[in-house]
Amino acid sequence: MSDCLFCKIIAGEIPSSKVYEDDLCYAFHDISPQAPTHFLVVPKEHIQSVSAVNDENARIVGHIFAVIAKLADELGFAGPGYRVVSNIGQAGQQTVPHLHFHVLAGRDMTWPPG
Ligand code: AMP
Ligand code: ZN
Image (cartoon, rainbow, N blue to C red; front, side):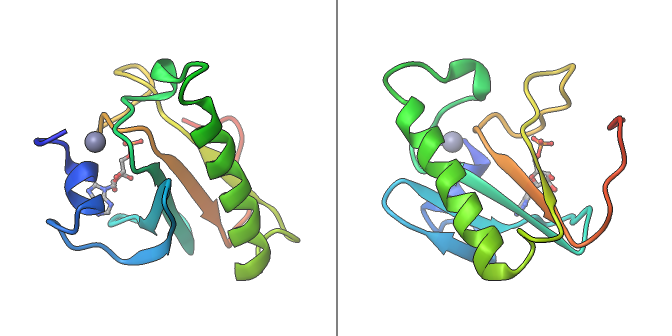
């Protein structure tokens, strides 16, 4: 999608700090980190949000969760624990309309989220 910020990051048109990449997804550090470790994992295919996940594209989401689990092991925060968040739409405070999963680690999280 030509005017999508994360599509531009995936295409390398806007710089990012890469954490991981494969055929289906791209992970990069959040520009405004909310925890000592905070990166985003996005599908390379433009999907608007969790609300646009369906039987056709759900395998990409499953793959992203497998990638998150692998990165948590490799980066050493699987043991202590971490949080995965996806904001959806206006009330969910989604600011970039390209599906993304925030991965936050390195501190104790609070509940409920704001
Ligand atoms: P959300 O508010 O859930 O849609 O999350 C969007 C996230 O993208 C926010 O945490 C922003 O800090 C992050 N963000 C915005 N622009 C960039 C960028 N150029 N590089 C990395 N992260 C970004
Ligand atoms: Zn996009």
